[in-house]
Length: 316
Image (tube, rainbow, N blue to C red; front, side, top):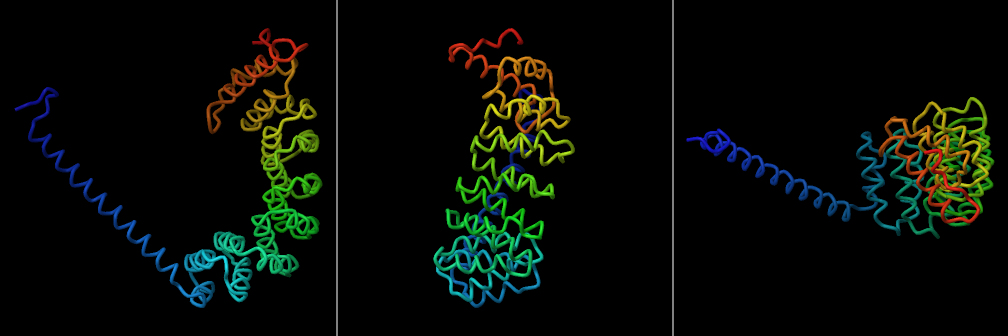
């Protein structure tokens, strides 16, 4: 017999049985995964501190990562455990270093803060950088003040870590330090400083970021970070550089510039944005042309809302 789609009922029944069996296997696998995860959590909660500290010196990176994660679950670890985590900040594996910094940031600030401050002067650059990252996660004005003393560290990784940590503190008083790092000789430091300024989202930094965009020969990642930071907190001071960035060869730079001009653009920007509507370069969401259209819509609305500002429909 055939059903209305021309498929035999026997074949349909076989397909249904296969799908049912596959679904049951998938459910058993998911339940087993949940059981293993719960068992790992229970084991992590009951693992003694000396065992976890010893595991930080294991040969396999996975064991060291799990040990750091276990030590980070209790914010009242002993001084020996905190010292072991500080030592792990110089681990050769980046993921282990990251987890050690996370674990230190989860500790009681009164206990771990002096240890991290002392680690900023460690002779090992990776350990200094990890301590800076952990201080950034702790946040606060005190952390920003301490980190500000290490912006001229001779090691590139340390300066980049300090720049990122200053952005994580959320303290606006460190904005001048990040602006100074925008002229660092190393592109990676300039990129991280620009990203940190985007986290602070302070329009006062727009002029310094615009200066970065105006310099010839800036690497792609630096230009991206600078335009993204301006888009996070647009300011009219950056308008000329944003207009120039609309013709940047990188689609992300053009997209961020269009996004920022939607907030601070004028009639001169409307023509460039109108021409950019035909740009079909793909972004994470939509295209560059989509952002240009949204920016023009914002300019038109602002023109209707503000007295003395013309509408920008002519360029469209």
